Length: 226
View 1 (cartoon, rainbow, N blue to C red):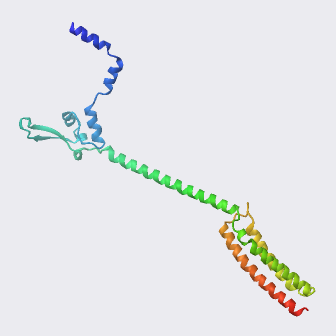
View 2 (cartoon, helix red, strand yellow):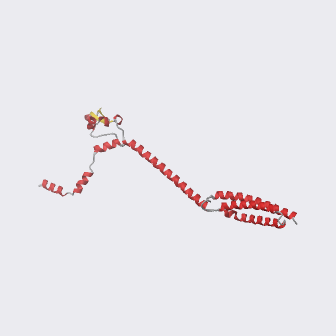
């Protein structure tokens, strides 16, 4: 009667429970094998089987051990006596190599990204003249002085100083053309503002010198043409 009741209860157990029980079974022999090949202790089971059948692979050897009533020959495993190597050192090296490759790739990506950002900023810088406004008033003031001075010289000398006036006008035209070129933006005129500023500074010095020469010519016209 007890046997019948036992088998009846066993039949009522769900298949999933049986399958789940099968899934969680622990295989100690396989665990020792993969731990030995990875980074765990160098140990295999069943030890006598490995000593007999896989001696060179496992590094198994017999040793006498005094253990009281349990003294006798015991199988021990030495990794140094094995003719195979662990997987873990190779895997660690491989993983480190992969990490270094990924690090290099990321470094190169960041470098390219920085170059791209820098080029975008340079392009934006070239497309807008941010410097001209700082020189515009000085240029206009000096151009008025030069224009008025040269006109005065022609009028005062009744055209006799035309050669000197034409020469100063020619030099002034070159300076103004250079300024105009520096001030242009767009395709074909991609110039950084730092270079524009240097060009404007040079042009301002040249224009100041031309103002001085014009003033000197005005003085001559006042002195020689009454």
